[in-house]
Length: 233
Image 1 (cartoon, rainbow, N blue to C red):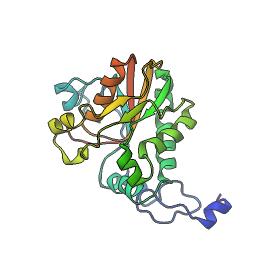
Image 2: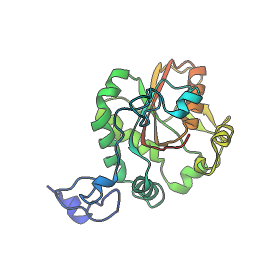
Image 3: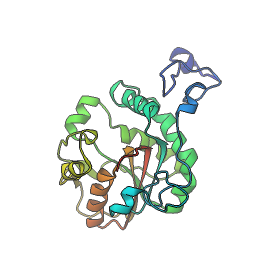
Image 4: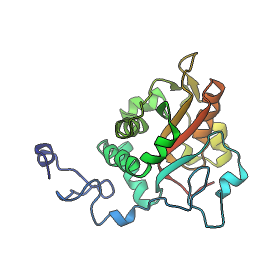
Protein backbone atom coordinates (compact mmCIF):
# COMPACT_ATOMS: atom_id res chain seq x y z
CA UNK A 1 0.00 0.00 0.00
CA UNK A 2 1.38 3.39 -1.00
CA UNK A 3 1.62 6.30 1.42
CA UNK A 4 0.95 9.96 0.57
CA UNK A 5 4.70 10.41 0.13
CA UNK A 6 4.78 7.57 -2.39
CA UNK A 7 1.95 9.20 -4.35
CA UNK A 8 3.69 12.58 -4.41
CA UNK A 9 7.12 11.08 -5.04
CA UNK A 10 6.58 7.67 -6.69
CA UNK A 11 9.32 5.15 -5.80
CA UNK A 12 11.54 4.00 -8.63
CA UNK A 13 13.09 0.66 -9.48
CA UNK A 14 16.65 0.43 -8.20
CA UNK A 15 17.72 -1.29 -11.43
CA UNK A 16 15.99 0.42 -14.38
CA UNK A 17 14.85 3.55 -12.49
CA UNK A 18 11.32 3.13 -13.83
CA UNK A 19 8.29 3.85 -11.68
CA UNK A 20 7.27 1.00 -9.40
CA UNK A 21 3.79 -0.39 -9.09
CA UNK A 22 2.14 -0.26 -5.63
CA UNK A 23 2.72 -4.03 -5.33
CA UNK A 24 6.45 -3.78 -6.07
CA UNK A 25 9.18 -3.09 -3.52
CA UNK A 26 12.62 -1.79 -4.45
CA UNK A 27 12.85 -3.47 -7.84
CA UNK A 28 10.22 -4.00 -10.54
CA UNK A 29 9.14 -7.47 -11.64
CA UNK A 30 10.95 -7.12 -14.96
CA UNK A 31 14.28 -6.32 -13.32
CA UNK A 32 14.16 -8.74 -10.39
CA UNK A 33 15.65 -11.63 -12.44
CA UNK A 34 18.55 -9.38 -13.49
CA UNK A 35 19.87 -9.25 -9.93
CA UNK A 36 21.95 -12.33 -9.17
CA UNK A 37 22.09 -13.12 -5.46
CA UNK A 38 25.21 -14.78 -4.09
CA UNK A 39 24.32 -18.23 -2.80
CA UNK A 40 26.12 -21.32 -1.53
CA UNK A 41 28.57 -22.71 -2.28
CA UNK A 42 30.62 -19.62 -1.54
CA UNK A 43 34.22 -18.83 -0.64
CA UNK A 44 34.70 -19.32 3.10
CA UNK A 45 36.76 -16.12 3.22
CA UNK A 46 35.31 -13.43 0.95
CA UNK A 47 31.95 -15.01 0.10
CA UNK A 48 32.33 -15.13 -3.69
CA UNK A 49 30.55 -17.95 -5.49
CA UNK A 50 32.71 -21.06 -5.90
CA UNK A 51 32.22 -24.59 -7.20
CA UNK A 52 31.26 -27.54 -5.02
CA UNK A 53 34.89 -28.66 -5.01
CA UNK A 54 36.31 -25.33 -3.81
CA UNK A 55 36.60 -23.99 -0.28
CA UNK A 56 38.18 -20.70 -1.30
CA UNK A 57 37.97 -18.62 -4.47
CA UNK A 58 41.16 -18.19 -6.60
CA UNK A 59 41.88 -14.81 -5.02
CA UNK A 60 41.67 -16.05 -1.44
CA UNK A 61 43.68 -19.15 -2.38
CA UNK A 62 46.53 -17.04 -3.73
CA UNK A 63 46.42 -14.11 -1.31
CA UNK A 64 46.12 -13.86 2.45
CA UNK A 65 43.55 -11.33 3.70
CA UNK A 66 43.57 -9.30 6.90
CA UNK A 67 39.87 -9.78 7.61
CA UNK A 68 38.16 -12.82 9.10
CA UNK A 69 35.43 -13.28 6.48
CA UNK A 70 32.74 -11.40 4.62
CA UNK A 71 29.49 -11.55 2.71
CA UNK A 72 28.05 -9.75 -0.31
CA UNK A 73 24.47 -9.76 -1.54
CA UNK A 74 24.59 -9.45 -5.33
CA UNK A 75 26.95 -10.31 -8.16
CA UNK A 76 28.40 -7.10 -9.61
CA UNK A 77 26.89 -7.59 -13.07
CA UNK A 78 25.64 -4.98 -15.55
CA UNK A 79 22.32 -4.50 -13.73
CA UNK A 80 24.09 -3.89 -10.44
CA UNK A 81 26.68 -1.61 -12.05
CA UNK A 82 23.93 0.63 -13.46
CA UNK A 83 22.09 0.66 -10.15
CA UNK A 84 25.15 1.61 -8.10
CA UNK A 85 26.17 4.23 -10.67
CA UNK A 86 22.84 6.06 -10.32
CA UNK A 87 22.97 5.63 -6.55
CA UNK A 88 26.40 7.27 -6.31
CA UNK A 89 26.41 9.77 -9.17
CA UNK A 90 22.77 10.55 -10.01
CA UNK A 91 21.54 11.28 -6.52
CA UNK A 92 19.38 8.17 -6.10
CA UNK A 93 20.03 8.01 -2.36
CA UNK A 94 16.67 6.32 -1.85
CA UNK A 95 18.17 3.11 -3.29
CA UNK A 96 20.01 2.69 0.02
CA UNK A 97 16.81 1.52 1.71
CA UNK A 98 16.33 -1.33 -0.77
CA UNK A 99 20.03 -2.25 -0.61
CA UNK A 100 20.24 -2.33 3.19
CA UNK A 101 16.88 -3.99 3.76
CA UNK A 102 17.81 -6.75 1.29
CA UNK A 103 21.19 -7.23 2.98
CA UNK A 104 19.50 -7.49 6.37
CA UNK A 105 16.94 -9.96 5.05
CA UNK A 106 19.69 -12.21 3.70
CA UNK A 107 22.36 -11.84 6.38
CA UNK A 108 20.74 -10.87 9.68
CA UNK A 109 21.46 -14.31 11.13
CA UNK A 110 25.08 -14.23 9.94
CA UNK A 111 25.53 -10.77 11.46
CA UNK A 112 24.05 -11.91 14.77
CA UNK A 113 26.60 -14.73 15.06
CA UNK A 114 29.47 -12.25 14.79
CA UNK A 115 28.32 -10.24 17.81
CA UNK A 116 29.93 -7.11 16.43
CA UNK A 117 30.41 -3.98 18.49
CA UNK A 118 29.74 -1.78 15.47
CA UNK A 119 29.15 -1.55 11.73
CA UNK A 120 31.79 0.77 10.26
CA UNK A 121 31.26 2.21 6.76
CA UNK A 122 34.32 2.70 4.55
CA UNK A 123 34.86 6.50 4.52
CA UNK A 124 35.23 8.82 1.55
CA UNK A 125 37.92 11.48 1.30
CA UNK A 126 36.52 14.91 2.20
CA UNK A 127 37.02 16.14 -1.36
CA UNK A 128 34.99 13.32 -2.86
CA UNK A 129 32.40 13.60 -0.10
CA UNK A 130 31.95 17.29 -0.95
CA UNK A 131 31.57 16.51 -4.66
CA UNK A 132 29.05 13.69 -4.13
CA UNK A 133 27.25 15.13 -1.12
CA UNK A 134 27.07 11.82 0.75
CA UNK A 135 28.98 8.63 1.49
CA UNK A 136 27.18 5.73 -0.18
CA UNK A 137 28.61 3.19 2.27
CA UNK A 138 27.41 5.25 5.21
CA UNK A 139 23.85 5.46 3.88
CA UNK A 140 23.73 1.68 3.55
CA UNK A 141 25.38 1.13 6.94
CA UNK A 142 22.97 3.41 8.79
CA UNK A 143 19.90 1.67 7.38
CA UNK A 144 21.45 -1.76 7.95
CA UNK A 145 22.29 -0.81 11.53
CA UNK A 146 18.63 -0.09 12.25
CA UNK A 147 17.55 -3.40 10.75
CA UNK A 148 20.03 -5.68 12.56
CA UNK A 149 20.34 -3.73 15.83
CA UNK A 150 24.11 -3.22 15.64
CA UNK A 151 25.37 0.35 16.26
CA UNK A 152 26.90 2.21 13.35
CA UNK A 153 30.21 4.02 13.90
CA UNK A 154 30.98 6.72 11.33
CA UNK A 155 33.74 8.66 13.06
CA UNK A 156 36.34 5.96 13.70
CA UNK A 157 38.03 6.04 10.28
CA UNK A 158 39.32 8.95 8.21
CA UNK A 159 40.30 8.73 4.57
CA UNK A 160 43.29 11.05 4.52
CA UNK A 161 44.42 10.49 0.92
CA UNK A 162 42.28 11.16 -2.14
CA UNK A 163 43.16 7.90 -3.88
CA UNK A 164 42.52 7.08 -7.52
CA UNK A 165 39.36 5.11 -8.23
CA UNK A 166 40.03 1.44 -7.57
CA UNK A 167 38.17 0.25 -10.68
CA UNK A 168 40.82 1.97 -12.85
CA UNK A 169 43.69 -0.03 -11.34
CA UNK A 170 45.16 -3.53 -11.40
CA UNK A 171 45.18 -5.66 -8.25
CA UNK A 172 48.76 -4.63 -7.37
CA UNK A 173 48.07 -0.98 -8.14
CA UNK A 174 44.99 -1.12 -5.90
CA UNK A 175 47.12 -2.35 -3.01
CA UNK A 176 49.72 0.39 -3.48
CA UNK A 177 47.00 2.98 -4.03
CA UNK A 178 45.63 2.40 -0.54
CA UNK A 179 48.88 2.55 1.43
CA UNK A 180 48.46 5.18 4.16
CA UNK A 181 45.07 6.13 2.68
CA UNK A 182 43.26 5.69 6.00
CA UNK A 183 43.91 6.64 9.59
CA UNK A 184 42.19 6.09 12.93
CA UNK A 185 40.50 9.17 14.38
CA UNK A 186 41.13 8.25 18.02
CA UNK A 187 44.04 6.90 20.06
CA UNK A 188 42.09 4.46 22.22
CA UNK A 189 39.93 2.15 20.11
CA UNK A 190 37.60 0.24 22.40
CA UNK A 191 35.87 -1.81 19.70
CA UNK A 192 36.91 -5.46 19.58
CA UNK A 193 34.81 -6.78 16.70
CA UNK A 194 33.62 -4.73 13.73
CA UNK A 195 31.83 -5.27 10.44
CA UNK A 196 33.07 -3.02 7.65
CA UNK A 197 30.42 -1.94 5.17
CA UNK A 198 31.03 -0.99 1.54
CA UNK A 199 29.11 -0.94 -1.72
CA UNK A 200 31.44 -3.10 -3.84
CA UNK A 201 34.03 -5.80 -3.08
CA UNK A 202 36.36 -6.93 -5.85
CA UNK A 203 39.88 -7.87 -4.75
CA UNK A 204 39.46 -6.92 -1.11
CA UNK A 205 42.31 -4.39 -1.16
CA UNK A 206 40.23 -1.66 0.52
CA UNK A 207 38.89 -4.00 3.20
CA UNK A 208 42.39 -5.38 3.78
CA UNK A 209 43.90 -1.92 4.19
CA UNK A 210 41.30 -0.90 6.75
CA UNK A 211 41.33 -4.26 8.56
CA UNK A 212 45.11 -4.09 8.94
CA UNK A 213 44.88 -0.59 10.36
CA UNK A 214 42.10 -1.52 12.78
CA UNK A 215 43.95 -4.57 14.07
CA UNK A 216 47.08 -2.51 14.69
CA UNK A 217 44.86 -0.23 16.77
CA UNK A 218 43.53 -3.03 18.96
CA UNK A 219 40.51 -4.40 17.11
CA UNK A 220 40.59 -8.18 17.34
CA UNK A 221 38.24 -9.31 14.56
CA UNK A 222 37.22 -7.58 11.33
CA UNK A 223 34.45 -8.80 9.02
CA UNK A 224 32.85 -7.10 6.04
CA UNK A 225 29.51 -6.88 4.32
CA UNK A 226 29.08 -5.48 0.82
CA UNK A 227 26.19 -4.83 -1.51
CA UNK A 228 27.88 -6.40 -4.53
CA UNK A 229 30.91 -8.53 -5.26
CA UNK A 230 32.89 -8.77 -8.48
CA UNK A 231 34.55 -11.68 -10.20
CA UNK A 232 37.96 -10.05 -10.41
CA UNK A 233 41.02 -11.18 -8.46
